Length: 89
Image (tube, rainbow, N blue to C red; front, side, top):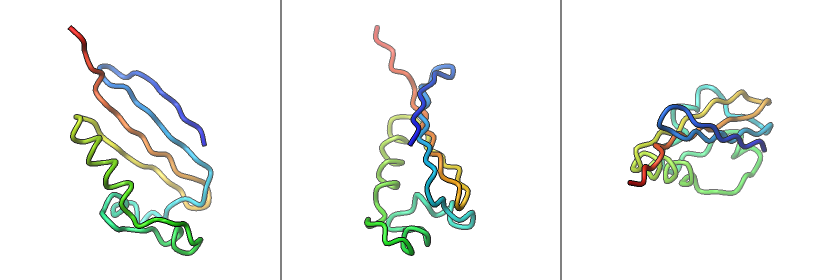
């Protein structure tokens, strides 16, 4: 796993990249849906109930940020989270 943190304007951007099994392109749109499990995760018997990403996206969105994903099956997946930088007066 590779983690990178950068600042882009008024946001902090955190990227999490792995070189795992990847997610099929036709499943990316459903990835943040509650209880969704990708076919590759089910085939590989990866544990989980499909709530982690939907909860994470809800928290990030509630804080004014965004969460995105890029993946290539057999190559890996990168999640990118962008959050506004808090200003202390």
